[in-house]
Length: 147
Image (cartoon, rainbow, N blue to C red; front, side):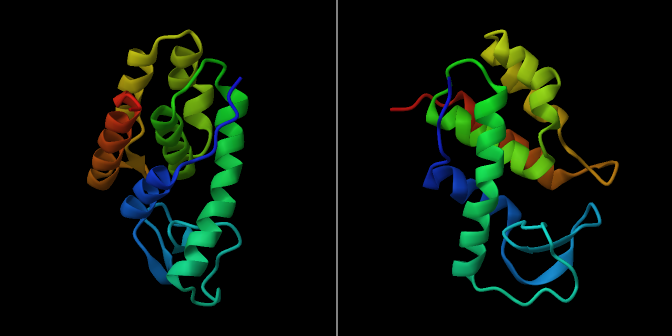
C-alpha cells in the first residue's frame, strides 16, 4: 500500500538528532558510528567523512528503513507519519514496527501508535534524555497533518 520515500524534512530531523561527526566514535549504545548516525561497517579505523559524504551515507542507509516501513505498515500514511516512522526505525531498528506501535497502526489506531513513540527511549539499557526529546519530536511530526 505504501511506497513512500523520506522527505528532506525527515532527513533533517534525523540529522538534527544524530548530529554530525566526521570521525568514528562509540555511541551511547556501544556501536561505532560516523557521520549522521551511520553504523554499518564502521570501526575505529573508518576514514573521516565530510558532511556531503555523511548525507549520502544517510540517504543510502535510510532506504533500508523506508523499505521496512513500506513493507510492515499496511494502512495509508501521510508524508509526516512516514518520515517519523523512518526516523524511529533508523534509530531503533525495526522492532517497533513489529511490536505494539506497528500493530496499533495496522489496526488503524493512529493515536495509540503515536503514543507508543515514548516507549522507545532506552539506549544501553538506560533511559536517554536525548531519546526522550527525539521521540517527542517524531511523535509531533507523526501527528502533524500534511498541508
